[in-house]
Length: 56
Image (cartoon, rainbow, N blue to C red; front, side, top):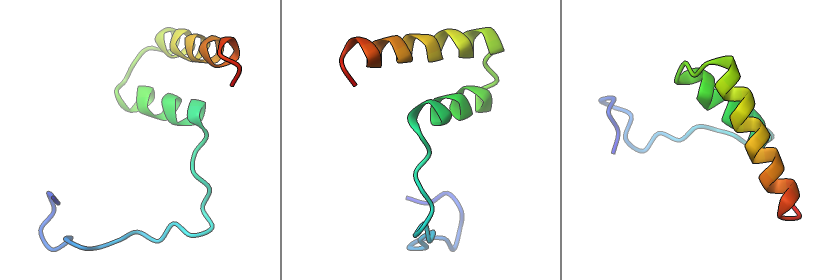
């Protein structure tokens, strides 16, 4: 479902563009939602420890 009229079936060419890395994407989304810098740092720290603790 598209919320913009006339954009049904439109695809965005992403060939050659690498997907964002996990922590970069988390940072982007937290900033998009206007979370504080301290909250961002805490979430990134939790995610890093989770990944390292579970052997990547």
